[in-house]
Amino acid sequence: MEKIITQAIIDSYLKELLDNVETDVIICGAGPSGLLCGYYLAKEKIKVTIFERHLKVGGGMPGGGIMFNKIAFQKEVLSILDEIGISYTHYKDDIYVADSIETISCLTYKTVKSGVKIFNLFSVEDVVVRENRVCGVVINWTAVQQSSLHVDPIAIISKYVVDATGHDCEVAKIVEKKLGWIKVKGEQPMWAQRGEEALLENTKEVCPGLVVCGMAANAFFGSYRMGAIFGGMFLSGKKAAELIKSKIK
Ligand code: 48F
Image (cartoon, rainbow, N blue to C red):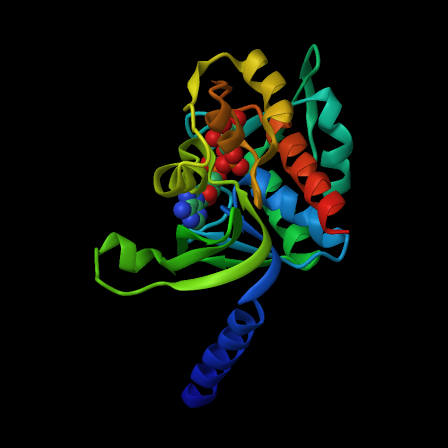
């Protein structure tokens, strides 16, 4: 039995990894914006592969605000919550509250079931380029990175790369540092209203082949942070998907 268990794990994992060596869209980071972006793309039959650095998916969402596992949403995203199957209650004015564990569970379920392949424990450490276009990423095991082992990475090829790495905007920073094609301004302090308003506008293709979404988009354009309100993250993930869909199809 042990032998079959081992064979089953290795065989099925390697098949999936091989199947994702070339994909339509690579999303870097399985936080709320990256997951939702993946969900809307996969719904359109676009092949999506997510690489997530950590063991768990969800980024900053499960932690809620200061580990109180509640998160806030605005009225305008209730239709997305309904589509994903997330329950919520009205709190005050146009603010609604949801359980962060339920939210990330429902979102992960919908994303995976829509056909997105998530590889956890992989860190994106570089991009692949051709001429003036980003056309893939370079990945290595997070454990290799953390232990500073000298182990060469592998490359994954795609039509589009999405930087959904959150506050650190890591993929865009690699492009800035190595190629100088773009400038990452860096995130501003907290101003929830302004941060949320800016997020949709900031969700865009910042150089050929690279789209920023979620907090990475605000960090890229030097906009404000907003704390444990997630309407902007959802709208940003959806917009990134629509943008890529219009280019691919
Ligand atoms: O930080 P994160 O949740 O990003 P987001 O989708 O959402 C932001 C909110 O959680 C919150 C907020 C709400 O208003 O401001 O912060 O923009 O998720 C980012 C994910 O990317 C992973 C990281 O582990 C996290 O799960 N990540 C970061 N860098 C890399 C990465 C990398 N180089 N390779 C792979 N994954």
